[in-house]
View (tube, one colour):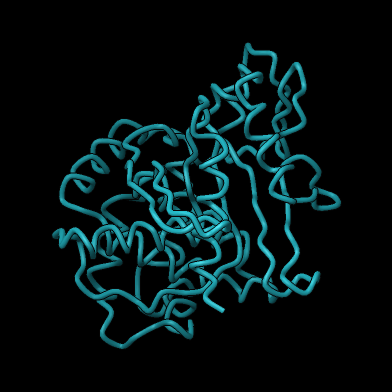
Length: 288
């Protein structure tokens, strides 16, 4: 079973059902990184590093909503309908922002999970959206929430639009637009995710987050790198940016640091990867 193809079909099914609406989705997580890697390879673009790790598998779709959609919640109704029509069910304990579809045999094996996320809580100050560390709740309610990611302070800046094409679950061909976060945004989110999963055996002690971080930097194009340095200077005084610098210094500033150890422990790691160049770029993007 090809999990990437399954996820691509699931995402295309969702995009097909909302294509006439105001819903424009941003794909994060492992699948978003796969899409970026596939994009730069097919485009034969010059990137920051030329050695990439093996692509890792995932069964999640991390989909970010622009805060404006939660503020004007009526615009989310097509997405709510699409999730219901496609057979997704709420995940207990994460109702309205995590949804799952069982696999072919009715179990979790081969199933797909959708996480609905959004930008920082601060984006909802002065609006009708009630936001806390766990969820942002639109008002009026339309049956969907989103998990705020405070470190995604640049979520809407420098987005990359790509065309995603393939087969729907019906077998029909479809092509839709999907957006990917800028490498600065993506890297900051992965740094915090690594920190949060460092001691979690169920999340491989952060190994795949360290691997993702390398891949994000490796697939950064020249234009994206220039814009990343612009964002670095613009947000240098933001608490999240300062903490990102601390995390890089603590975990990714030498081969002996735990972040680099976790990277090299990953089953997808290859000795040819450019560790020194990766660390140098990461420290330049998030200086201490």
